[in-house]
Image 1 (cartoon, each protein chain N blue to C red):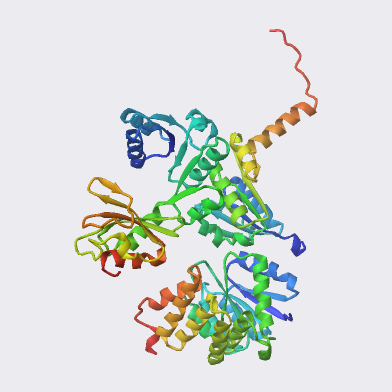
Image 2 (cartoon, rainbow over the protein chains, first blue to last red):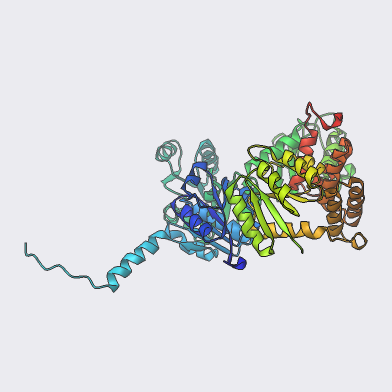
Length: 149
Length: 221
Length: 220
């Protein structure tokens, strides 16, 4: 990979989603820092993961500073707490001027406000829901014959 | 006035009690079911059980008609989102957030929260600045610490007792805003004479804080 | 910039990998060592002009490796890799001519910029030192060559060019500390901190130098 396609990416939260993204990005040659407040969470990283691990609470300004968020090209907030993701995303965008910031948000009711605040949100419910719906409406499904109970 | 408070603990209980006694209509939002039951038994407030950063819960609690909201949960991220929702979705005129990490005071301000209070910051500056002065009973940094507001008790040894404010020549950038004398509250003028046992509410800039102290108490820091 | 070859010494695989990948662009020849022993062995065989060295490694510790590097190759440039809040041996490394630090985690750009700066520093012409940045760079060059008095001179020049920045005060403090002038050193750390209360290196230096230790630097 040429060096200008290599990003410096910060991932907040090392759960299933965070570790999945971190492993993939690191594997394809990007420079990755994963932040999680529990050290044990880093066990989810693969042995090939070549990025950094930073133990700390990302809603603490100092922790984002330590992660060198000021130099990041991308930040992805993936913790299981919507409010943490939304706060970290805003701080990254407004205070550290990270060019690309994304946050996972479970609760759809709040999405409107987040959009208003200019945060790019990804909702797992919406994505999975759309895939199911798409699959039902686009591919033909053989209807059951009436069994006549 | 209608106030929404999101959070829990003893602070909430006493805050509610104070607000209710002033005639405010208070609604509390709390995540803990048992605490909700306790609060509603002991206080004349409406208690809503749920997540205060959930717009539906805020609406149930009457966010559309509230005049002010206080977000004082132990999590900075929750307090931020509560105030942002209150402001952007429900247009509550006054929002106040508590921050635990003192760095977040500035962070919140940058993210559009008008009032963010850091207890850590307030307590630590109280301790640092009043350590050697028993006369100062209260000191609050306001405006990101650019202004100090203090309450100062004049004892009989103070060099300014018996003088008018005009004669004292207070240091630059300072102001005796209010005098508390017995049960009276006096907004002083130049001719007001200071007396022993007066409590002065004084505003200063941090840089001439010690000059002001010296002037009013005669002692230096 | 003219990099011949760089040696990365770190026991962590991810650090070695991140560093080598980041430095590929500089067209440098990059070699790695997993500990001090391997580093010293490679140093005897091959000609490196820059070493990136982790201070915390199993086996011979980083400071001792640095000391031995100095015996084999006094001219080599060394960048110290540290974890957050652990640069308490800064003065020790400066004494050994290593004045550049990079804190984990690091961004690829950050590494490239530092490496380029350290290597370009050798080309600085004393006659052309005119502004704050080049005075600091030249002072660091003097430290690498262990010309501490010359370094002090350039740091003082830097301060007079821009008395509002903390870096020169902090470095000056470190050199004074090496020369056992603890009180003057602390004055300079304090000056750096009062200019910028968030300037971490000065805070660490001041804390360390004001903490009394039985084996204090004052005694030798």
